[in-house]
Picture 1: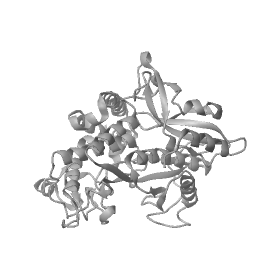
Picture 2 (picture 1 turned 180 degrees about the horizontal axis):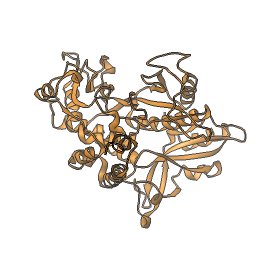
Picture 3 (picture 1 turned 30 degrees about the vertical axis):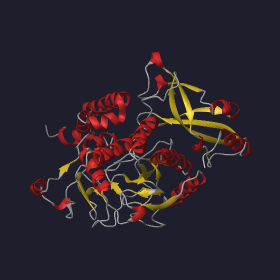
Picture 4 (picture 1 turned 60 degrees about the horizontal axis):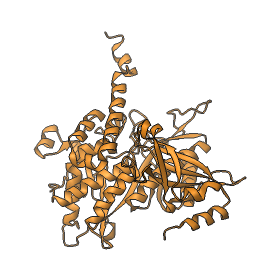
Length: 443
């Protein structure tokens, strides 16, 4: 049941709320907020909180900087880790509006809402279950993050080797107090690497949950004297952090991906959705894997999928079909990583899937063999292509893809590509330690 303005005012009084953070994200998915006192809450609930959009990455120009925050009442939550003496701190996730009272076309949450509306007009509702991974690192004497892990744990290990257990437990408890349904929490493959999975829900709420999850994880880790990072590949030679996205479409309350008559239990809608994901996967990568570092994870040999294919039983494929059927039928896109802006990532994935449905795109035969074991010639014969090998190549694919560009809209697309091109050029112009080690004495 949706909350009303009066519900929130009552909760704020009952829970002794003194400060509210009006949260939103910039185009990179970084959480921003405007802090208000409880005395300003009633006016803020009317959408009257103003901020300077020109200071936010990918938003407006100086001459058109006034923007407003329209809170989503159902996102009201208390920060359970904050001290309660003197009052509690709450948050509301907001949509961004321009000075004319229209949804800002470059706002990531508004962009996802636009594609969700397109799906609704076709009769579909998207549900997503994310699997975000992260690293916990020690901090130095100045509180600055290091890349030194404080455990020697591995996949599903328990204490004492998994020294991040207490931090992971406290993160899970804080999330549950904020309304999450945590389904799994475990140590991942690499030392210091962890995963917390929460229950699937509709696409917008899932994107909100991912943003909240990242914020909470960093805050709780800091309380434990650790640094939590969602950087895709922080340690050379170890697995990177991914964020597999389990996706399904529902229609009239039923899972539109399920067909009990099909050999694999998949409907034509599911096959076409997979076809859309595969067709647009190279352009999608610019959004789901948006950093220079993302492509240090997307290399063969570390469980990260790089080959454009699908399978019901093969984790080397880009799109995997988990075993569950009926209501749990879903497709898992395996290349996204947690540096992605979840609103933009879900917008482009959904847009690609809808394009597959509209144009009945054939995903081709599933790949049963381990693609990592294939030679280049065998992959070529099987028609298996690869994801972009670096950020600039991915941006080039995005520039040529009108479907994915239309999901982002002109404003977000232009600012995203401009910002990421600058990022690539800064990286490209640096002299890195590897080059010094490799060439300084040799030449």
